Length: 306
Image 1 (spheres, rainbow, N blue to C red):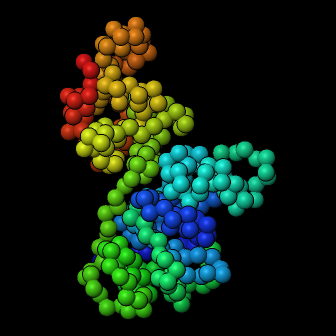
Image 2 (image 1 turned 180 degrees about the horizontal axis):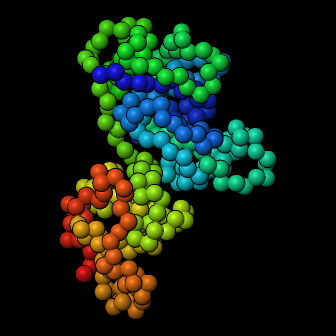
Image 3 (image 1 turned 90 degrees about the horizontal axis):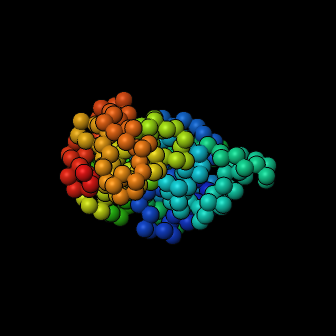
């Protein structure tokens, strides 16, 4: 199986902050402009190299997903996993790269490449990039496991992901057999972004499209055995998300929205929500991303207040 991998260029500050944060399990390798990214499939490898004067490959991760987002949503989804200590620091960095005026308050849209299982090398383990990677490359270069340089990079990265000691990127003898896609382990940030895009950035109940008002809800909470899988998610307007988590509304396995009588009994209110009772939800076009029936059944039986 021939797979692709890329070596992308990044700056030292982004790398150093993340290297010093071992608790971070997913990162956003963002681009200051909203560029489409189709170089990799989920499960292929994404390596990063520092700008001059370093010019070394210093880490990588498993590519999970790519999208374009307002920078504020990227910050809300990933926080310091964007490689910045604060929202202000991230925005200043984006504005500097875009050469924006100091007073420009635009909610810039940026490119987001989400990586899981990231690894960051200590300086003694940094490696030279392949000879074919020119110092003039400013974005990234693509390799495949069918060529010598790509195979060596794949094996090097696979060893890091497997927790073994790298033996030198120059060697190409296969130690892990045929290259295979690596299943990305989505975190909370990636879950939020993937669910948001899967629902075409519309609330599953109201079709509201005001992005700051929308939230990715777990059907079965992560703490109760749920997963960060798109089929365990619904994109909901913020107030409906709160009611869903509290059990005052639910979605049935046949994808119908139900509202508990307890809203009226406990709050003497809820006319707007009852008007939505019984309608079919707006589900993703891809049936493989539809809400999982078992997760919905769990919410109906364990969380909903009939």
